[in-house]
Image (cartoon, rainbow, N blue to C red; front, side):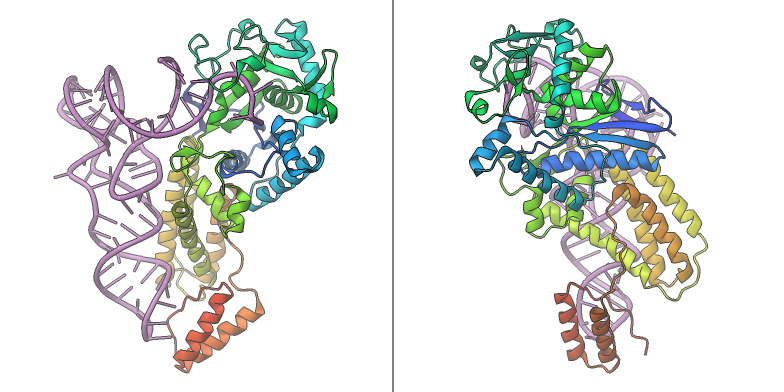
Length: 460
RNA sequence: GGCGGCAUAGCCAAGUGGUAAGGCAGAGGUCUGCAAAACCUCCACUCUCCGGUUCAAAUCCGGAUGCCGCCUCCA
């Protein structure tokens, strides 16, 4: 069985094979450094991480690039609003992104290129587009002439004659030949000019547009065509259409072979964006949710469907993880028991069921169902003392295998703290002595330390 | 107006022609000093609606409805 992925480009599930047998090139639209990331961004990154980890699990070497947009009007505005210099403002937001990334258990990818470090490359791309007749200058801004690019609109299925012009932008701000053309390099405003926030080119002082930044960085780090481009559905048009146009006009090659789009995060039935407060990863971490809980919550819905943001959903994710943790903690405490003869079969079912689920377009729900079925079976056997202590490492190692992809298990020893250990021993002694009041008091004390006590039957 | 996505139990969610996975919540039980956890049992004759094809449809076809996203510098 091979890996099948839903390719937005063809609107079908296709068998995935990389261009080179041993490695996969991935490009993900990364964050814009104008604000701390919100859960909508986080979902995209958790999804990209799932793709990255799963392909890695299948044995591919991964070349993954995630750009960081640090040239953007939002950034200049944000810096102004805080009174910080744009450089400090960007540095602060990138540091916050790093922290969020670690909290969410996202693997470090190969490159996180900054737009500001590659402006020359972007200008060169535009020079070539002009030379090839795909771009034109108008009042010191450079635009892409989409009438020259026949494939424009194929990814999103958009019909350019029928789109509503000016629905989200004020066309009076531009001097394009055709209002459907998109910007490559935009002349800077006077305020930006005064602060030195611009790139000097033969045409004038400009900023690179978002699609130019993304397309240039993808090609620079991954070549003319990468295997998979990962992003959110809301970026399909115009961003991705524009990226494709830039790369296609330049090389006559597709920018990416597979386009994977995850759906958004909804709050009160609407898309989360910067305007919705309290939905940043930082904010949720501060209000007591763990990065692992956020990760699981974002991960456990199939990527084609929206994730709903609410305290109830996060609580559900927390309780679901507790079930997983309970199983692992229970395993660690097994001391006596008869060996379970069918363990090999059970662990094989876990592994193969998990693989089959994920290779069908990353069917995470089915993969989790396999895991929970095994968890139930392990719990049943453990409570009946039907697992031998020497079988535990094999079970844990099987869970670690699937967790290399999921990153949601918690394998740390239950109580390493000598203080906790001592309290547990004291409580056990109190229970032996049938001093229930003291035992309960000790249990409360342990709970304060964040330790949940699960008694075994007293064996006096 | 155009393009795209989604619709399965109280909630989340898998399932693309043959008796509806899994999780959360809930009910009863076992175990326990009491709890908690765990385990057992129960919890959709039904898959937004209306037609059609078929021996057989959540699944295929036609139509309708509802919700969401995007429409070219918000990023």
